[in-house]
Length: 203
Image 1 (tube, rainbow, N blue to C red):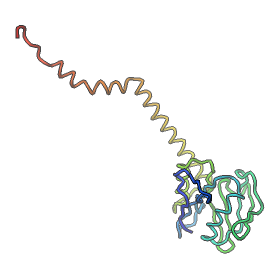
Image 2: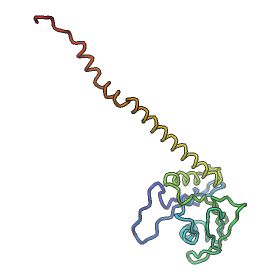
Image 3: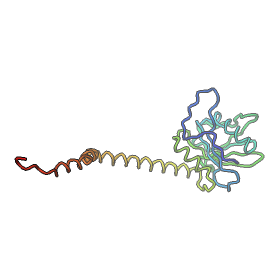
């Protein structure tokens, strides 16, 4: 395996050429200890027929020819039995109770099995980038669903913190925070003028 990012998910995809957009995939580094997840894949849709060819085209070169893929049908509306890819056909199966709904299982007849976290297509770019990095971390220990839940908690905490900061700024403004800063900036001058000696009559 190799740590590979074919697209930087933190940057919005904007491609206007006729060539297909780059694959959004990150894998654990070579020689990493066995883990529950071998990397992360961020597909652009829930259409396996459209998404699998690009994924297997890359993984065939890295892992040996991918022959079978399994998913949990929870998040895949249509599961084709076979998907034609470059030069061969990948058989697709599904397991509902036995397979994590956020995981894609891949089998190669020459090299073995790999499990990828499937990042929901609608995920925002920042969260997807964080998930990719975490899933490819050699010391990772969470399941696919565990990674998704952790990312959601992180997102909610970040939103709460931003909302709290905004609320504090609103309160500060409503209590004259900006006016107070403006007045205080002139107060030394005012104080100095107030201390000037009053001239005696007739001077």
